[in-house]
Image (tube, helix red, strand yellow):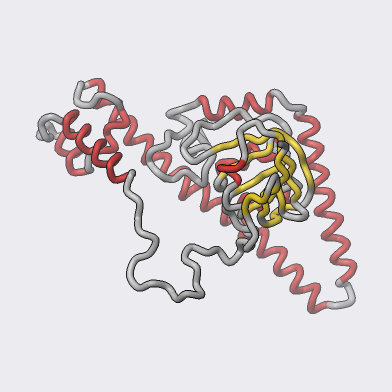
Length: 302
């Protein structure tokens, strides 16, 4: 906790907003993670990771032998391989240092200030501090803050809730050309979505797995993950890496074959289908589904 307690969020994306508590503020998150692993065969998980490393080393040696007589291609392979390893480290450092620790420390500082203000009967709950500006907080600290802070906070809460219900227009400015579909994703297959008891998407990691769906929506509390569960979400980011070795499969509404979830799924050899468009609204929590990471489809048990 001293090293990683500033991690924020659990589930969707990197959770870099200030709404979600970090691990120091809500230690139940890492405790649930530990509990998930405590229920597993850790020796088996270690062997899976060792097998993946061995396969990667064998494949690397095989490619090197194949390119031994082609120095130009061999050199390009080694350069790209080293660059990929280096860039992956940079990406993970970015996620941890910028999106987790930095925001997590700021979030915790705000929480501690809010807790102090609750003790002084200035606020009703610690998170109310998020509805005050830096200038207002400075003024309160100096004893010259605004009167009626709880009432001010309630007004701003109501305004935030009202704005959250607003829906932006589909476009701003000039209408797009007819042949351009607004919001289209070039990676998304044109036939994605629900088709009978099949959901079509894009193959992101090969393999096939059947298991219970664990539906996780943005902002929802982290669910206890059990070995073989198939994660169904709109999208996932670095927050989910610790539990990914336990998953039997991954199904996402969005995503990209080059983003974090797909890369780690391939590393752990977890079948994954992404860019389904509507998996989270078509699959029930606990429903038995089959992920086919070779053909890019999800079969629903009806």
